Length: 167
Image (cartoon, one colour):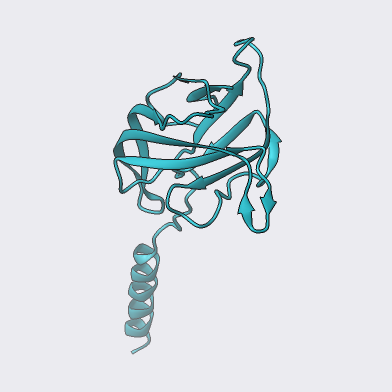
């Protein structure tokens, strides 16, 4: 009877050890943000901060939360929609409120792209990269954005600018 218990105990230990899986921790999986750098239209090689910049998703009642709202910045990182072929933004220069109304100069910019789903791992699942990036600036009588240049039409990393905006 003692040998049977030892045998069953050994089998139980072997089954327990072989049934364990390595813990999956995701360290590689993030969908990249769109990196925009702002430049001086009169001196294209010089970065130029946009004063009191505010960015909101088109049709959204809230601002993008990937950078501080109403700050002067020469670079921003903003998310693109993964389940759509385009994402629109309202970019506001000199943003301020007067009686709960926006008083800054508002430009509407839409980015078009193809979404590429990439499997990273079981722990991370899928991320999205974006290809064939294009832009459309809605023209108005007071556009503060003067020119837009797509630097990298394939967005798979966020270590350098994808888009240059001249103002």
